[in-house]
Image (cartoon, rainbow, N blue to C red; front, side, top):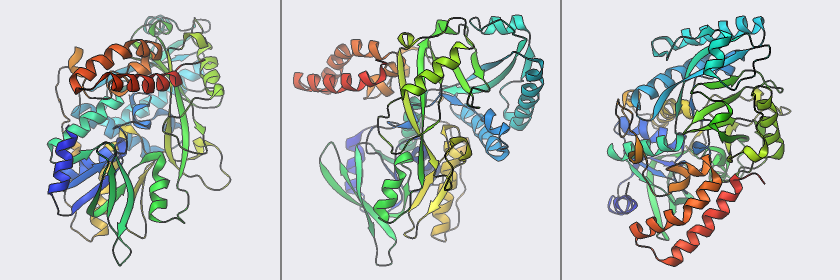
Length: 477
């Protein structure tokens, strides 16, 4: 991934792009991957780092959505289960089969969750990751050593997928480059251009590093900016109604000893009727998530005190050693780009998690909603609209079978997993795993990077100040 090569290509290739995508998170990368699989000429622009926002702050699960099944969202679950299987097949080096256990404290729960998860298995069909089954009290304790044993009747074992979200984003970006796409970060779109008919025919963006502006021609422009989609919609039409309702989800990172073992814990019904996960990840334990409506999207959302308390209070009901605020190694928050609810609705669980593709009068294509698991299908549906808008014969999508960059059937260990520039946050993930440790590592990392990038002491000082300011937001005071 070389920015100079991408900029040179943009300068040299004067012709129109088939698709110019705004946004380098899960949605935008999914659109790019699918469009390139059909042979289209694609340019993707990201104003910051790839997966800078929500796409690096998920629960690290590739899942069908057990709770959506209980809500009757059968179509959503079927789609997600199919995409879950495809992603594990196309990126076995980036994903794993993660066993989960639901602890049972009543015999009725055994029937309710047992039947529900058998349906979940059946819906996955040939892409099923493993059979769900009842396990005894002794087996549940063996799998979840720190689970509370009083009243425990046993557990339900089932399977979902796990991944490293930011690392997957980088793999998709590299795959897109290998397929002939032009992918550029730190490129901010400042203007959408239109022809006399009022339809968008391109855009103007600024290279935030080189400080130069570029004018681009495009058959279609795709708005894949997640929680910031309204900004692009209003760039197109200042009177455009609000389409996005951001919902915040936070995660607490604890030492793995709080749960023990390699299986994940799924709490199927919290005090507010949602689910909570405690998932082993990168040697730590990630516990989350919340679902809180927020008024305005932010690039660095901050967890609310009430969200932290909610997760700790829920966890203490299930764990032998109740985690305290002082035990939290890091806390991170992300925003979900949900479709704005109907007037009068204030509950996030009433807002559909399905993705939607919206076409403005100017032919601007906007993709909203969805989740990491379905990123590829979101891209396919968006590219279909491109062909429909222009009355073109739809080219077949091949993204469902596309192996991602670094594909290997054997899991790669060690330093070969770590690559890129924005190292401590989205490459080795230490900022999310242990914020204090990341601050202790930062001076040495900055020194090494300065040598590799041929930067001076002033650059090191500036980078350290900026990073430490950021890292403090991941600590609980």
